[in-house]
Amino acid sequence: MTEKLELLEKHRSFDGTQLKYRHYSKILGCDMTFSLFLPNREKFEAPPLIWWLSGLTCTDDNFTHKAGAQKRAAELGLAMLMPDTSPRGNSVADDTDWDLGQGASFYVNATQSPWARNYQMYDYVVTELTKIAREEFGLTGPESIMGHSMGGHGALVIGLRNPGRFRSISTFAPIVNPTEVPWGVKAFNAYLGVDQESWSKWDATKLLAEHDGTQTPMLIDQGTGDSFYNSQLQPEKLADIATSKNSPLTLRMQDGYDHSYYFIASFIDEHLDFHQKYL
Amino acid sequence: MTEKLELLEKHRSFDGTQLKYRHYSKILGCDMTFSLFLPNREKFEAPPLIWWLSGLTCTDDNFTHKAGAQKRAAELGLAMLMPDTSPRGNSVADDTDWDLGQGASFYVNATQSPWARNYQMYDYVVTELTKIAREEFGLTGPESIMGHSMGGHGALVIGLRNPGRFRSISTFAPIVNPTEVPWGVKAFNAYLGVDQESWSKWDATKLLAEHDGTQTPMLIDQGTGDSFYNSQLQPEKLADIATSKNSPLTLRMQDGYDHSYYFIASFIDEHLDFHQKYL
Image (cartoon, rainbow over all chains, first blue to last red; front, side, top):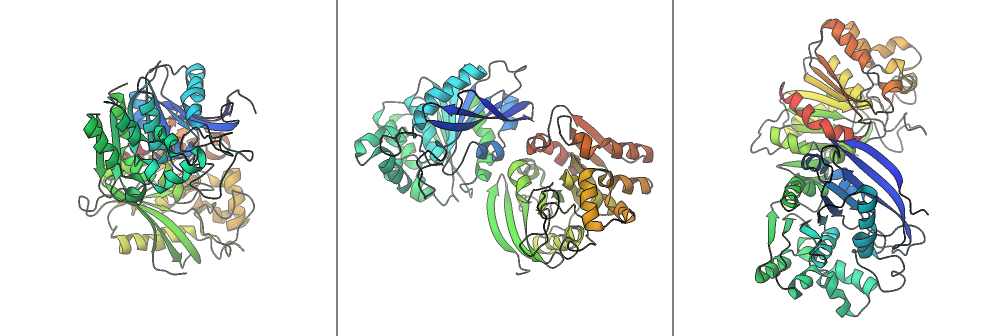
C-alpha cells in the first residue's frame, strides 16, 4: 500500500506512450490501477485530457486493449485516462453477481454498509485521480469525458455535475436513466439505500431535467443490435429531455452494432474528433 | 465434435463483420476455434484473404481484439482469417512451459510422440482451414499471409513454401531462424526430433537460402525495444540472405517499440496497405 505511483507497463503506441500504473487510493481505501495514454509530449506539450469510464465487469484494460483509440489520440495530441471501474481487493465488499460490487461501482459515492467504506468512485475520479493527472503528469489543460454503458452513465453524471470543467461528453450505449432500469435500481438500492430521493443526483436524465439549459455538448452512439438497448439503456429518454431544454445532445442510432468493443472501436475516432472541437 | 461450423460470435465491426467459429478439425483431431473478419460483401463481393498467425500463448482472439486491423481491412475490402495457434483440449498433448505444447505449435507438422497425433498445424492451415475459407465463405480470391513472433515464423514458412499461392508476406518481430534460437530449438527437438536435417524446411532463413531468387514481396517490422530481439528474433539474418538472393524483403527497425500488440497496432495499417498492392 503506497500512494506513490508504481509503473506496471509502458509501451510505445503509435507516436505516443501507453502506460499502466498501480497506486494506493486514500479515498477508496485500496490499491487501484489505471491506464493512461500520452501523445508525443515533444509535439504536444500540454495535451487536453479525455477521461474514459468503462462499463460493468471491465477494468482499465478493456478500452486500452480493444478500442483502438490510440491512433487518433496520437494524431490529435490528446491524453486519455482510463480508471478502473470500482475499488478492488479482498478487503473490499463484493457480490457474487457481476452487476454489483467489484467491477460495478456505477461511479457513485455509496452511503450504505458495507459499500460506503470503499465505493466512493465519484470522488476518486473527480478529485483523487484528477490530482494525480495534474500533478504527476502535468495534465492541467482542458478536459472532456466519455464512457460506455455503466461508464456512459458515469461520464454523463460526472460531466453534467461539473459543467465548468468538462467541455464535452460522449458516450456509447449509456445507461441514461439508472433510477428506472434494472441494473441501476439494483445498484442504487445497494449503494444508496431505499430512499430514492438520494438517487436523483446520480441519474443523467434527472440531472438534465432539473437543470435549466445545460450547454455542454453531448454525443451518444447507440447500436440498434444492442441486446440491452430496450431494457437498460433507452437513450431517447435523455435525448427527449435535452430537446425540451435546448441542450446540445446528438443521439445517433448505429444500424446493427451491438454492445461490444467492436461497436466502440467502429466509432471511437469520431468521438475523439467530436471532443477535439471543444478542447 | 462436429465438422459443421458453429457460430460463436458475430459482431458488426466498422463496415464489415467480425465472426468467431468452432469446428472439429479432422487433421488436428480436436475442436478448434478461428476468427474471421469479412468486409461488407455487398461492396466487396470477392475479397482477397489475408491470413494472420499469432505468436506464443495466443489464440485467435489476440489479433482480433487488440490489433485494430478491422478499420483498414473494411476500407480496403480485405477478409482476414485468424486461426488458433495450436490444437487444443484435454486430449491433446501439452507441456507445463508456455513455449511448448498448446499455444506453441510453431505451425509445423510434428513427427514425434506424443505430439504427432495432433500437432499438424501446417496442414491444418494450408489445407483444412483453407478449404473452409473457400467453400464455406467463398474466399477464393488472392491470398497473402502475415503474423507475429512465432506466427511471423509460421507466415514466412507457409508463404515461402507456397510461393504460387501467397502473393506477399508480412511479419512483426518474426522468429526467422528457429533452428538457431532457444524457442525454436526447444520446440523442434520436441515436435521434429533430434535429427536436425528434418528441421530445415521449417526455418525461413534456411528456406530462403536454399531457394534461388524467391520473388514473394516480404515486409518485416521489428521494434528496437523488443526484449526478444537479440535472443530469439534476429531478423537481419533473413534480410541478409534476401539481399544475397535478390529477394524483395524490406526490414524496418521501429524505434522504441516492444513485442506487444501496441507495436502491431501501430503499424498494422501499413501492413494491410503493403499486401493490398499485390492482391
